[in-house]
Image (tube, rainbow, N blue to C red; front, side, top):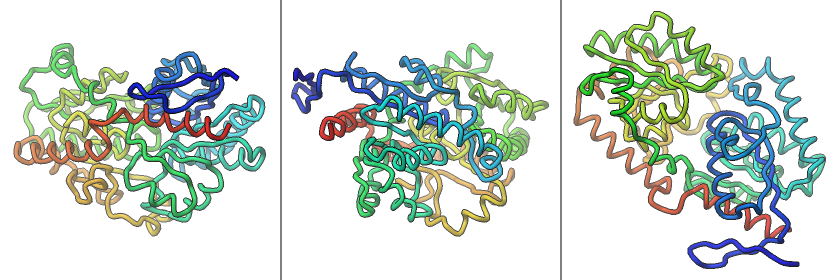
Length: 404
């Protein structure tokens, strides 16, 4: 059978049958959609027309040609109070993905992040069709809490693509084949520009202090964090004359953000789209952000930040005893210290957040020191090496080629 080859730095590193590689990619929320879009671009750059991709995604994956099976609105939830009412819908979406996979029999199913959603798919597929190859792209932080879940992952996944350098040894000891590919978010470093143009377009003076506020991309995050962020901004505005605030957001929570920011205590610009989001990072003097992928994007933009997170009291009561690590922000986990101020649950008070934001806006030494730490963390994630999405794509191609 005639084979096609893909190359790396001029060398042939693997071969695949001439039949196009068929992949089912599934994400459950906007951050996973970004990773999926980058992975699709990498696969196309290596294989050209030699790959057929179907699945579930959002705008980033659609830009790479994906026709999603359904939108992300039903699956972008987190926390017991938020997930429980959505369980019937989530389970229906799980069945839809599994039925599609069973009908089309792709060479591999790549499940991207969102473990509350995607791991249900993996469990069901392995029960109904054990021979299907299932790949997990982005490990849940079970090394931080509920380590026992790694054993279940080893039963339900054939390969894990790890974003963090310390993850392979952890998962391998549970029998899950794991490959460190690096964090694809570092590929967005070149997108962190346009700040001066954005300030000009929005009528913000070059010397005006700008705070970018990021209350999350899930409805539950908006509900728990936006009121606290509002009060924190109110306190900051009293202490920082001329403060301007910017909130980048995504379509499925735009209405919530608009409603939650009525009578906002400082001049506010609400932005949509990745281009304006990254320009806002570039324009900002500091950020107040929900814990998540966005903190790594802020690190790449070298934007000093204060991080917070809150969930429902029941979720926190049940999960708190299982949390093994004292830190929640990826930069801090990588550096093994509190380089970025972070506040979880009851500690995330408006006063505590405001004090740290004001310090970053008024103390240049503190802001510059954090920027140095952000640069160190980015290097640990693979910045300066081959693009992580390309490494992930190669790992998938090699895995499928070996098991075909």
